[in-house]
Amino acid sequence: MSTENNVEIARKVLGSGLYVEEYLTDDAVWTIPGFGIYKGKEEISTKLLGPMHGLMESMGNSVITNIIAQEDYVVVESYAENRITKTGKPYNNTYCHVYQFVDGQINHVTEYADTALAKSVFTS
Image 1 (cartoon, helix red, strand yellow):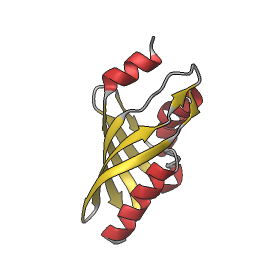
Image 2 (image 1 turned 90 degrees about the vertical axis):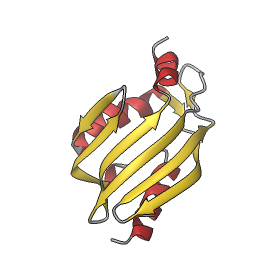
Image 3 (image 1 turned 135 degrees about the vertical axis):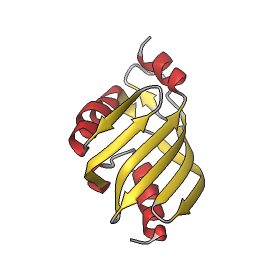
Image 4 (image 1 turned 180 degrees about the vertical axis):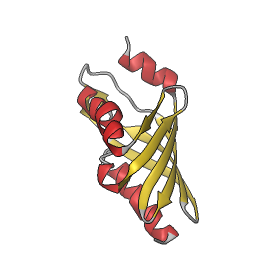
């Protein structure tokens, strides 16, 4: 796949409220420094994305502020708007996602975010 196609997939992922499973390879890895590493599409879905969606009243939307792409890598800076937990707390984090693609699918994601914000919103 082309770099342009990879960028389009990254845009779709962020625009979908992180409904990303259809774009992941079966052996994908999702790393969040300071939070955890999830290995395989099933684990990413059941231990990361599913629980996250379960905590949210609204995923709001992601605003992309910058995209850099080269070969099989796409780096996207973004922030969330109108993201609200089921307890009514705002969760408008700032992100940098580094996507690695293999044959047009996401094989690895490194997600940099404010983990202190995440912990304060979800553990208090």
